[in-house]
Length: 301
Image 1 (cartoon, rainbow, N blue to C red):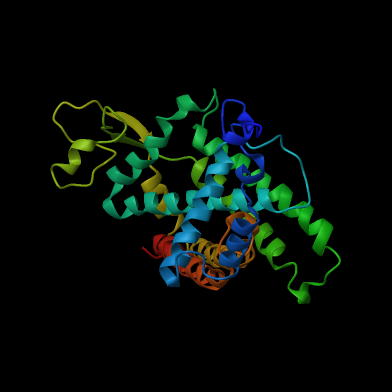
Image 2 (cartoon, one colour):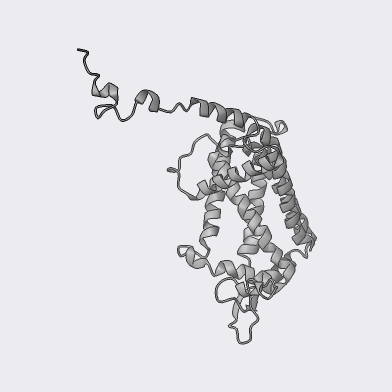
């Protein structure tokens, strides 16, 4: 009489729940396909793909400046340099858009400045809000990492080699920003009476098809005394020398941004496919020129 097959062979209760020989996934093919995509145009071709990958990589790096990754360690890589630069570029865009309120008159511009003052309660007891403090930390990180990389990599090169262009333009911008802060952020101003909205931003202005986001003109509104930065800006830019200095600084910023962007785009952390990188670099150039024109418009106005 033939022996009955074992329970395991028949698939009974003693059979293994997972056949490890067939249950493990082989990720080598997936990694190979991903590597091929990164060498090409990824999953989205053309300029649209370049823009999508650039925005995704940019926003991911911005998020990593906020979400803690690891303890701060000074290393030779440029991840901290790239992330701090991107965070400051976002601030530069927001600052440029905010300064456009100067074209709407003193109420709008001074109200915009007072909006940040009303956020001082977030600044841990300092006369600044948490965003300004975070930007200061990002700037200090950017300067320290840039100086360390310049010392470790480029210090032995000559100026004519072009290896020190970022360092020279960066030091020039640091000088300008120091002057700019003492001139506008900490400079003495005349008082200006303003009716701020009760909840930071005047949402009701949208329904009236107006753009007074940072002030109200309702009868009986409570007035406060704020810094007249509108008047101060016009007084500063009455001087041709200050106008030319400011425009020169904007040109230096544009050069620094373009040089840095060209180095940042190929970085593995951004994960921009290789055939999209040149397009992404040109998109960055266009963005830089646009932002520069916005800043140049202030002294010219």
